[in-house]
Length: 480
Ligand code: NDP
Image 1 (cartoon, helix red, strand yellow):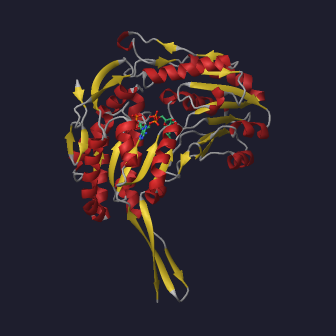
Image 2 (cartoon, helix red, strand yellow):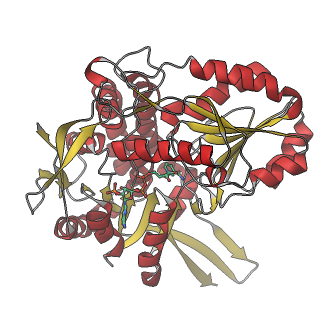
Image 3 (cartoon, helix red, strand yellow):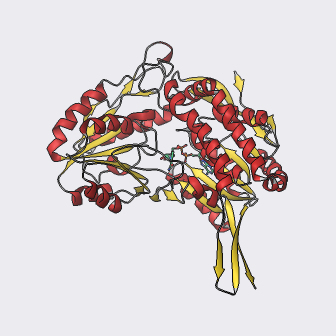
């Protein structure tokens, strides 16, 4: 049984308490490795290491920092196969998906910020004939990065890469549910020659290790991705210390389909936006609104395709969907199917756990599920389920569907399907969300602002937005 280790001050170390947490493989339901149950003491040592490393890392010429970060990207690319296998074993997602999406994107995150930092510049403002202002953008110091389990290395690196590129030292915690690729990243960082203390990865629970990262005054900024409730807890602790906060939280995204859309492309993409990664992507469109003239056709085609989706062993290349991340999460998702039925919904496809034969017989699988007949404002249509469960519902007018779409507390992403440019522009402007995809989904340009409004979070990641977050601007005014 493998013992995962913390990465503190450049070395792989055991938790001070000697305690470990079981790490389950979701596809089999079996414990396959052990995770350090780190506490505040481990985090304190990591923070101290980061403080000591900060002066030299932040003063290192940008080109030198960039080379080390690019080397991390290169090593991730070289280790695509073992990293993808590890991500799949840890999370339950198909290996092919981790190989196609998670691991390449983690490498892309490091590559992107290794180069972005070389193009990052600050403002100068001349005041006519009196003075010149210039703005410095300095690294903040020690920053905390906390990430969830759904896209483990992808989201972990999305925070760490800009933080390091900007010259900060990092104390990071992956979700204790999916720690393996963060552990493998520690080894990659050592191999890439990242100086000791620049990045520290502490494994453990949110309420212990995570809480110390958030509440320790030496950590000056927190970049967090996870649930809205956890975001609230973090904000409450961090706000009185005036820490910088970037919070990427939950979503309940609308997928709005007009009759004039490119139907085949819409249907194929809607399959992905509903069920990719077992529906465990914060950007998945879980509320599908379909214009009435094509509602019945869409329903028939979507249900048929969904029933044909193969749920199976993540190691099997033919499995379109793997296991959900944990037993507790499987129970939570299925409890929403029950709730939907109590609220008057009809299950058109799925709605139950799936038993996969062989080595996966005790795994946590759920059939992709479609529910119809629910009111837009019932709990099933308002609360985040974060699994392979979508609702479908017809609409007649733009005004009506806008009301449905905007009725939730969340505002992360929305998808629109129409060939009418005027309508797309009009709707995109009125939808309450940080991201709108028109005739596509999850098409990502890493330069663009990423994040949500309302209960979906505060701040934006991506491009120079993340570098803005991980630096502190200082204006210098010189009168002449
Ligand atoms: P959680 O909020 O439960 O956990 C996220 C991370 O925070 C984990 O590492 C967790 O540790 C840690 N944590 C928990 N409590 C605390 C605390 N008190 N102090 C510090 N850290 C803490 O989210 P999930 O892991 O369940 O992820 C799913 C959620 O993430 C969904 O709501 C989803 O929408 C959201 N998400 C948002 C994205 C976005 O970009 N907006 C992208 C992806 C996911 P532990 O594992 O021990 O609980």
